[in-house]
Image (cartoon, rainbow, N blue to C red; front, side, top):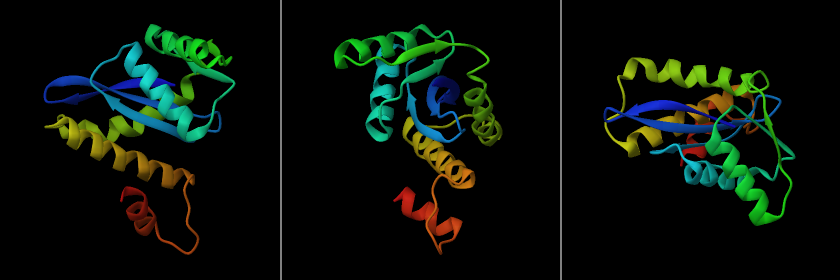
Length: 148
């Protein structure tokens, strides 16, 4: 679980992303702030879509650590937090595709357009990783069915 920066209307927004140990994208969320509430919202969304993990690797972000601790207290679960810079490299390396796609854009004009564009980029990455496949279908048809 990690976040990266994306420029929207001249301000930096935060793209939270989660990748499992195999390298598949678990979930992503664009938020205006980087705080405990935004991290907690992302964590709840990722867990509701993909199930509860046993261990989450994070960097030294205090917001992510507090979000996981809050989740553990409220749900009486035991998600273990591992704060290791080097174990988080798979998430950090996965950010480069987002940065590469958005580098030439000079930022986005609105939060909504940024969110929709980043969703499209993430869906394409998930299809290329082989996470989503529909038999006897093209990449374009798969993308259209997911984006709708």
